[in-house]
Image 1 (cartoon, helix red, strand yellow):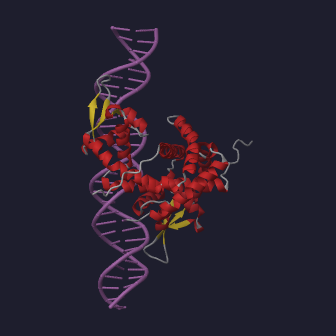
Image 2 (tube, protein in one colour):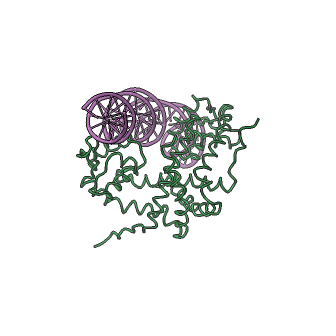
Image 3 (cartoon, protein in one colour):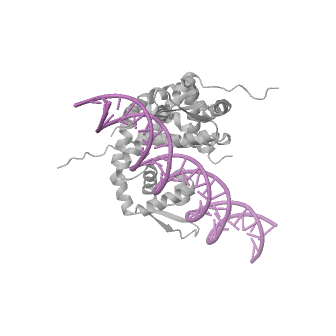
Length: 158
Length: 158
DNA sequence: CGACATTCGTTCACCTTTCAACTTCTTAGG
DNA sequence: CCTAAGAAGTTGAAAGGTGAACGAATGTCG
């Protein structure tokens, strides 16, 4: 009796597209990371600065920040400790829930962010946005959106 | 005197598309990695197995493998040590260049690869390929190709 | 209320990645 | 040839990431 079905291999086109996608993402990550290095920031650092700077009162709960930046609480905890030592953020107790902590963007963190942002944006343009027509970028966005939704729904499932 | 030009911020559409792209890639990596865990493989392991299995004689030079998988020699060296301990590959001396080494796919490595591949392909389908129309996938491929070329050209520049 | 489950964030032990130093071998130039 | 420059890989220490276990605080339900 046959329980397994034959694997549905990728067609040639699918495989090429998939591999290009993976490759672009690895190289892009590498390049953006490299362009941030002169500022002594990683993309993870930068991402956290962005989230904090866009939030009310320049502060977020650890858990929310972890969820927003798609990392484990443990990793974020280490990460924030490093950023705290670098003077970019500080921890602050939460009045309403005494288990909780806020990560607060310091003035230095804000200045760093504002100083670095133009360079990072430029990097994103040079290596991605400006290499694709606005129409194609729109199509890409439209194609990726359902995937993003699917993946968000998957997170934390068995 | 003004030397800096005003930063060319991303438009709203550009920013949304860019963020979705980044988000998809992080979640996708996470998901694919998770789907490989039951087989005790990481994507890095899998990628190496694929490269080796597709190569002549099931063997590649360390440097070539490092270049193909976009990682440093050091990282690859540690990685191969781990995979060697797991019985998936073995190192073999290179006749023509006595500095060099081959990484050779073992039978066990080949079997592992063949056993895991269908599941991995299925994972790629469920979380990506099948969520996008063939036309959109083609467009995506076409849009990403110049970016891939640009990024390849960038690698290892100052 | 009181017990029990759950959430928040940190910590510990362990694994992976990075970076620079190092060995060995090859190649190019005088 | 012989030396110097460079390439191939490895190594070891330090930094970063992971997952389970933990203490403290909150929620929930009889």
